[in-house]
Image 1 (spheres, rainbow, N blue to C red):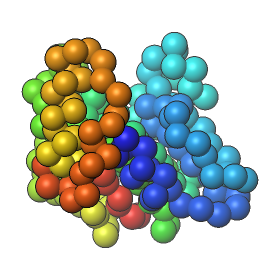
Image 2: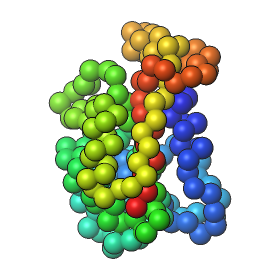
Image 3: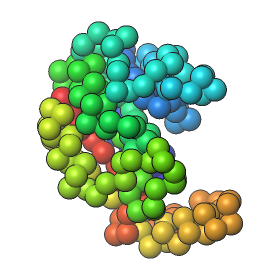
Image 4: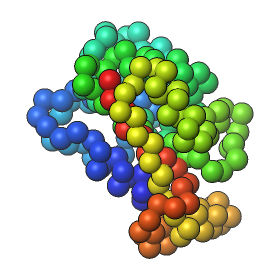
Length: 178
């Protein structure tokens, strides 16, 4: 719920923008009159390109206006390298819109990037991003709902809608500019 709202609120609007969805394709609707490509290592995801975001060499530098990485960067083996590559393929004044979970223990051996806010800010800055904002997503009701979802293996997103202040984050929303 909060991830979808965050992405929808922060995706740039405008005609003719060129976007890259790393880990996509994303279920979120795209703004009209924008061209999007996606890259994912899993062929079953039906991305535009098969590959990893640590090596975006198939794209020239400054190819995209926006890059979206929804709940994906924490699964990348070399997050700093992936962020440098994303920075490279973004145009000047380009923007990265990302979300990452932050509170649950690793779900498996490929779950590397559940970092605190300060670490995301530092890694993004070292990769060359500026105006980095890492915002908490979720509150106490979202936390309760996540526990129910994990315990029952299914739970509709209803309780999280009661959170008005993001005080107990279950994820971070990231906006970072080139």
